[in-house]
Length: 363
Image (cartoon, rainbow, N blue to C red; front, side, top):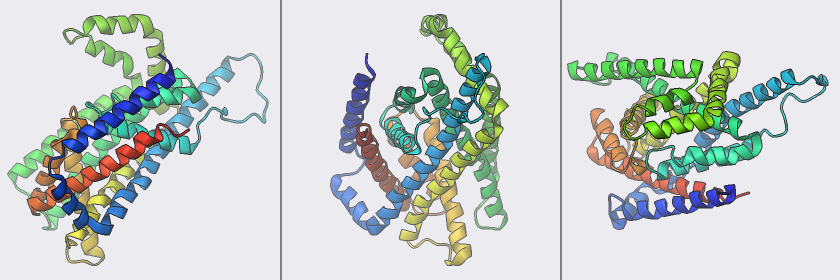
């Protein structure tokens, strides 16, 4: 099947998913319109801030792509008997432009939001498109590395949010009791376990070990064995490239991680805008607005944790709403505010999904 035909399949699947989501909204169109009118001009910064967020995501992915291409070019140069000219460029011309990476970032996330089990749509599409610039193996390894970095940053965001909560509890801004302390302790252990898993993945690769793990699941043993038999060498090369990022280019690794973490912090601003819309500013002034922003970080942190634990639903239908309601109620705010925040965030997601799907046809 040609790459253009696969592109068209992704495009029409994305459009179909948008139509389904519009007709399965949790509220009537009348209620939806009332919420949108209530948001008013605040919709502009709520939707617009994602221009910055996706830009930071693209910078994170670009760090990985540039590192991958540089190391691939260096390995080719080392293997070549012909000496390289001193004035030769450090990077080959196949490194895609930032705008192309930015477009693929938006489209990839749009497909991830619109398909069950986030990643079944966006990641294959990114590999398909990026392979036109850097080749199949480099495209696959850079997309896998970015997906790993995306989730790795999630865990650091959740982990650091625990200490934000504890700091606010210490100054009497948030409650703390045995039940809350137990939940926070469980999240800390959960994050530490996955930090260890990610460290092994970054040191030894992830693809081959994942296929071996899938082979232990009834019904997948034969498929896993066939994949390893047919493409084992390719998968081992991809794993080697994954391990090389941390081992050989730590600067790119940590810059990519920092960008991804920063995008989570900036993502919290959309909740911050909605809290201000409802007049919730913790007394105003620099201190009050800072506290409100920290509350927004905690709301986003808890909601994304809840949504990722049950990530097999398209757009985490119902899960994200429940996460917003629970996290906002845990901070002593009304459940009605949680419903409003979840609906406006859902509207923002649909708008950006449409943008991402349309960008698939932009050359």
